[in-house]
Length: 171
Image (cartoon, rainbow, N blue to C red; front, side, top):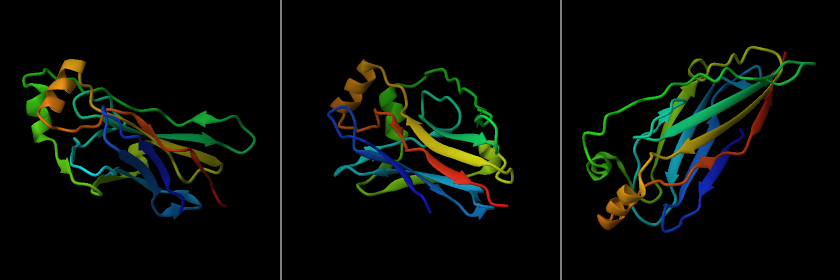
């Protein structure tokens, strides 16, 4: 089992977080699902809203799982990049929103299983599959970031990307 992992270095602007992408059970050598996990690798609490998957979301952050498919003897076919964009009217301050975000204590994580249907690929096709994940934190203006820091709230501020991992379907 291949586990992809990325880390956001801890700075004064962002906590130490890790993004992992783990394969689920395989069908003919290709995972039929993936599990993304974001781990608080810092030594303090971090507030982390549950990100939306494969959809733009400035309030909660985003996890994008990409799949490139290459049939035998053909050029790479980027998996269908389905997505959306959530839109909100900011009726509360960033501080109020952040206070509602779940708290991850050191070593704790959030995760979600993503079946192939949600990722829009067919693990039954013959060929090779290249898979990776990206995390984009919620958007906070510089003023909002300062307000959260002043309130003692640590939050994700850095993007993360896992390494690319390849799978080849078996007959």
